Image 1 (cartoon, rainbow, N blue to C red):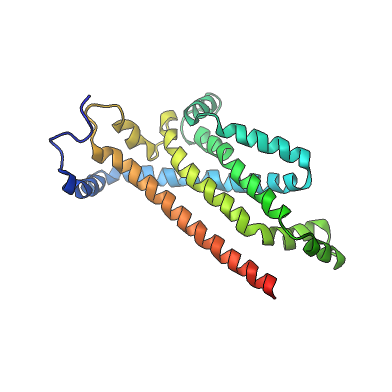
Image 2 (tube, rainbow, N blue to C red):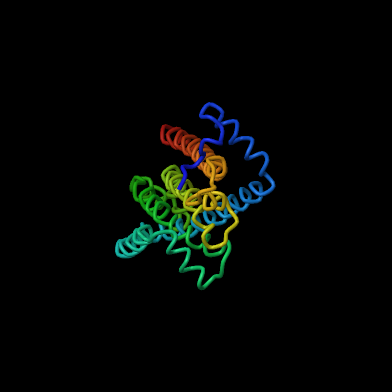
Length: 232
C-alpha cells in the first residue's frame, strides 16, 4: 500500500493550501456531511443532557440507584462504538438513529456523574436555610441546588460533547452521512490522499474545539456568578 499523499501530491509546505483547496472543491459533499454531523451531535447531546440531568438528580438522592446507574453508564463506555452502532442498526435501521442513540448512551456517564457530584457538593446549610424559608423539596432543587451545581454540570456536558463529536464519525459505518464518510473513504485505500482524510478530520477537530471553548466560557461565567452570589 502506498503511503497517503504519495510523491505526486503537494509538498509538505504546500499541504495546508492543498487541503483547503480540496475542501473548497468538494464542499458540495462536505457541506451536507458537516450539517449532518452537527445535527447528530445536537440531537444526541440534547437528549443526553435531559436524561443525564434527571438520572443525576435521582442518583444524588438514592445511593443504591447511583451505584447502579453509574455502573451501567460506565459499562457502556467500554463497548466499541463500531459494535454498538452496528448492534443498534439491527433494530433502528441504517442512518442517523442508531448513531444518535449510541451517542446518548456514551454521553450519559459524565452528565450523570457531574450532576450528582454538583448537587451533593451544595452546602447542607444552604439547603436547610431554604427549607426553613418554607421551600418544598422541588423548589429547593430548582431554586437552590441546581443553580449552585450548574458549573459542575456544564463541565460534564463539556466533556460529553467533545467525546460525542469525535465518536460520531464512526456513524459513517452504519450509513450516517456525516464527517466520518471522507475519513472512511480515505483509510485503507491505496488511492487515498491526505487531503481526503483531512477533509473529515479537520472539521471534526474544529467542531470539538469550538464546542469546548463555548462551554468552557459558559462554565467560567457561571462559576464567577456563583462566587459573586456566595460573597453576597
